Length: 479
View 1 (tube, one colour):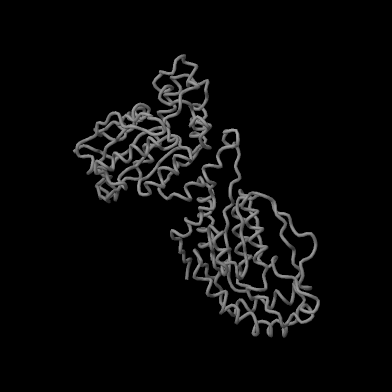
View 2 (cartoon, one colour):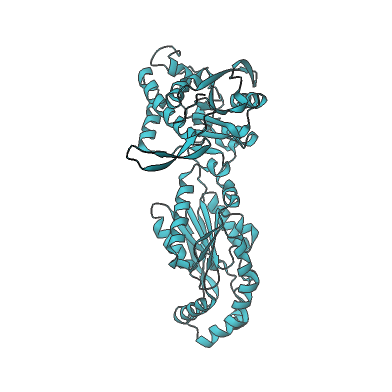
């Protein structure tokens, strides 16, 4: 703990991939029903993966392997081929002259419409396309709400409107001779075509379209997989990344400076206890302290560090790290003071400043401050167990910045946070870090966090009246 005294997988996972995840969050205003009660259930926007590549490159096999390894998620595979335009009888009779690898051969508008419907959590009918008669047939396939959508096809990365729907874009790269061999086998066995027809079509349409439309779309990929489904390392890393993203709260996909400590049954159990209106003060304090300690420990993990080699009692060399020693805490009076003991337990001799911020009309007013004189040169852990509207947090952060503290040197620690407060803080201060243990549904018409835990300060310090009454109906939760 800090002492404060004195041919392979080719990832291109950059900020673009994370930015695309903005599609996964609703506007905070949607957290209220017309009567002011936050929605108890929300449609979780699915994680969308695009898988492109040349004909017979192994795209479908890669998709099937990914699906098999995401067995604990609801996953659907949608083929771009389902959205081919149906050919007229005349076109079908001369299908050898039709370029099925050209962007115009697909009904992209229908594809976009279906994807948008799925993103809203609504069921949609996906067309069924018959390759032998070159028409959509039957009633199609009904797809319901899912966690992951894999959109596979030769040109899924060609159209920007389709790319913009994706959280991850993959290009499967295979040797052209291998692809041709696979195409011949597939078209002769599965689609009833003769070899000469396949070769003529390949030379006339497939190869030129690959070079003109498909290969250039490779530059838009976040991940390029050489050798297709044979590249186990690539697929393992992709699946691991998907699991990580699915495990994150949607807001973490928008704000790279927001961190929610990994949820476990222990953490959920402690949240259950401190949120329960029947929990007595002694138990509330005990489990709140445990949760606060976890949040503090997680927050300290975001401090800058330097490597250091030490010698162990066995005479061996161990390469470890030393955390920043220029550190202080700042608690927002009064609930923030509940977090001070955990911080002192983790950081020997740490200095802790205090801020008192009071509601003033629709805003907040600073009433009292006591900060270390050299705070501008320190990393600052800002302590407040509940982030509600974000008004008090913004006032506190603004004060710290006015005292010379660098925005990137502030780590804001709290137990629960409402989306409204997260939006308010992260949009205004994108370089600080927020660490919390759980993100709640939102705020109600009284600015209380829902489901929340009541007035934290009153419950922790026993100032809310009767021991069994842990919050007062007219009290508004501080942010």
